[in-house]
Image (cartoon, rainbow, N blue to C red; front, side, top):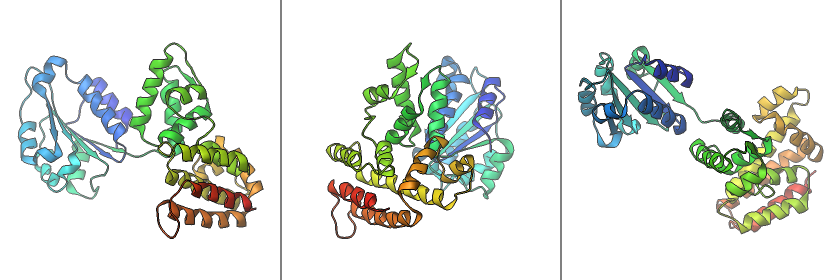
Length: 335
């Protein structure tokens, strides 16, 4: 597989392969790489005749091959970009005849989003031989947080860990959405290079006191009153704080706490890796482990599973804001 940095180097040096297959779940990186090709390979004048953008659902393999076999006009290259190439999944294998004998002046870019081409297929193997394949994988929460940090620090901004977590908690793993909010934040901050939780609350609309991160911590520390205050805020703002997402967050916390309890002799670095969280969170699990025994955690996970079903309208109870209060009360009662 090819890395982003390798493709960037291809573009910078203009030592280009005839085919680039950009596939996978995370569309942000696919779009980012595609934009680099469009912005850097052809001049504005060259784009008029040599930039061909087709959509999988509106084109055919025969049409793609026909365009790929044309020579560029007043340019060393032409780009043939197939967006949503996954919509060609039933016929894309027939591209292999062109892939085996491509035109070196044509740069064929296949945006195959939300899925991957079977690596056992002949098409994939032929593209790998003469072109470049990039698999765009979704990032885990701790990877998203590192990505946010790197994106801001590389632009000269300072941001504290809590603010990074708030962004991740609120926007999830949607890198496109996070990127848009970060760019908005950078525009607002201008020459002020320090980003704090107040900025996140003011400009991205995340409460620094009432969010899933603070709820999880309050439950872990058995701060019942604080947890209920956050629950009330959630019930007053249901669109920003969906019950299903909150219950999933609580479940993940106790599932991780179960792993923490089960590995008492593991060092911190290894523990963070086992749980799949940033080491910043380990103290939170250390405190929670003193408040909830291993047996208690197992019981709580069973309780949360029931309330997860309730939140989705399954079983007897209806999905109401009071469900979260009830769940919190039952969790905090467990030792």
